[in-house]
Figure 1 (cartoon, helix red, strand yellow):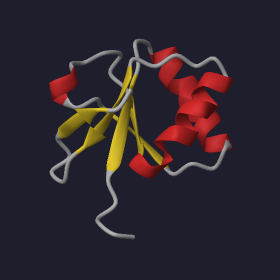
Figure 2 (figure 1 turned 90 degrees about the vertical axis):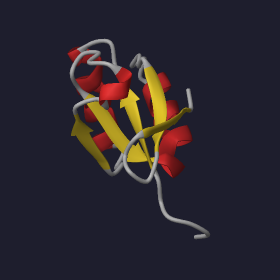
Figure 3 (figure 1 turned 120 degrees about the horizontal axis):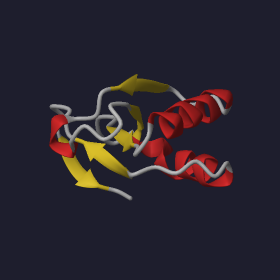
Figure 4 (figure 1 turned 60 degrees about the vertical axis):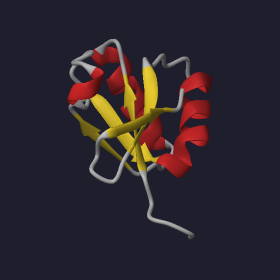
Length: 87
């Protein structure tokens, strides 16, 4: 690994979407954490999922393959601030 591992946060428009995403991602074996969305992204549905940035392509494929909609995927910086929108 060439640098520190970074995280990304997935935001949702509804609690139902967030819960479905959590179920599918846990079943697929991803390391994740359900968190409140970062303040910079607004409240949304009040739930977001933090995953490793390196897992984002596979996570997105799982969500798309299971028809789980999400609002966006954002990379988090070292201080857990929103650094960039990935999707």
